[in-house]
Length: 137
Image 1: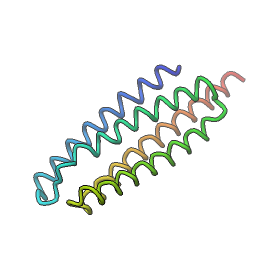
Image 2: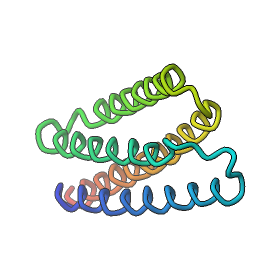
Image 3: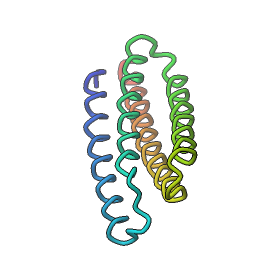
Image 4: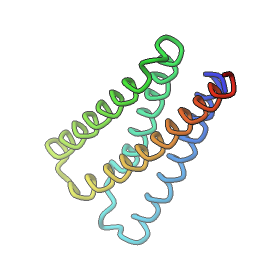
């Protein structure tokens, strides 16, 4: 699997995941617990979707320019994602101050969903890479 197919594979699956999860969770909240729906809800999946694009482009650049540092980039991206998620939560609590608990639960639910997806993707990538190296030897 070359770099562009890895990136394309990730982006297609991540796009489908965020659209599906965004609609399902949003409809679930509006249908079953409408008093907990907040106006900023669509921003939550969008935030993680945009960060997913940033993640895969950084991953792709690392594969191209510094393949031996891929684990470091992976961990760095996880730290950056956590930092930006916490900053977004802090901004929401300070500036918007409406449905704070609902926003925090939704935000960290999507955080865990995207973290799980990216971790599984990275694990599969590394596993396939090691298998290809073993075949070459």
